[in-house]
Amino acid sequence: MTLALTGGTGFVGQAVLDLLEGSGERVRVLARKVPQDKRDFRWVEGSLNEPFALSHLVADAECVIHIAGLTRAINTDHFEIVNVTGTLNVVEAAVRAGAKRMVFVSSLAAREPELSAYGASKRRAETVVAASGLDWTIVRPPGVYGPRDTDYLEMFKAAKKGVLPVPAGGRSSMIHVRDLARLLLALRAGGEGITHEVFEPDDARQGGWTHTDLARSIGSAVGTSVTPIPLPGFALKAAAMVDERLRGRNARLTRDRASYLAHKDWTVSARRAVPSAIWKPEILTREGLRQTAQWYREAGML
Image (cartoon, rainbow, N blue to C red; front, side, top):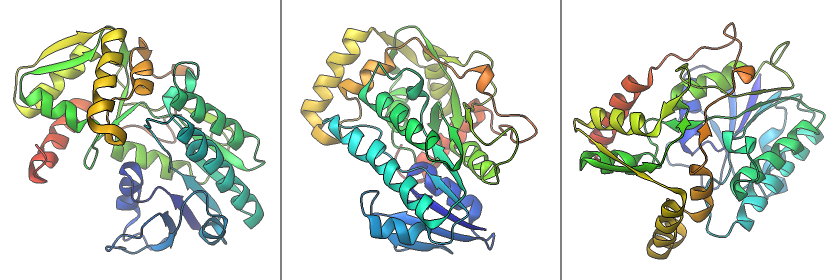
């Protein structure tokens, strides 16, 4: 099987390649800039909006795992360009090449598209995939953490100082990036109970995590007793405006992101659980957080 992968230099994509390295599988990876360390994979330089690169990527591929996407932007029009039009371009290239199978990485934010431009773009991208005529499966990850991640890194840094601002109230589900990568590879063959399904995977913690519990667990991972500071929605948006002003396009907390962070329920739905015969999470979040903190330390990031 030839596997085509977008987003191979990103956080989730690298975790997938970690699992594939040394497997002997034929893997072709799209990247805007080919890394110096190509490992054992064939790389295609290009973007989601370059038809020639996409045609090269999916040539002779039986399955496409589409991970690449935009998670934050000051100009929310960019979500449409990358997440919706980019997905359409990948789908059209796959159909033209005769690929049969697509695994699409969406987001739990797509479940509530009215809350953010990001979530709305992921929901529209899901519609594109569902109408493609391919044998598809959509995965909506919740909070994804683990080695190489830069989004949760700021929470680890704040926790080390003993005070961690969190959204007020509410709960969210979590998943370690390696478990997510295992799931994506488990889904590539398709079949009954997999094809034309939308899955919401997590760490198997019933009811997810309250934001304060997660903050304290991150504190434990870095060896600090943390005081969570709950921020209501208006305070999150105010903080986002400050971050956008200070860091511009590099802002971690944008107003669009603040809109969905303030939502009270980002736990996965039991009716969209992955069948246990196909996949089960292996990494408990408290242990995964400790491993992640250690990775940050060894990388000089914490």
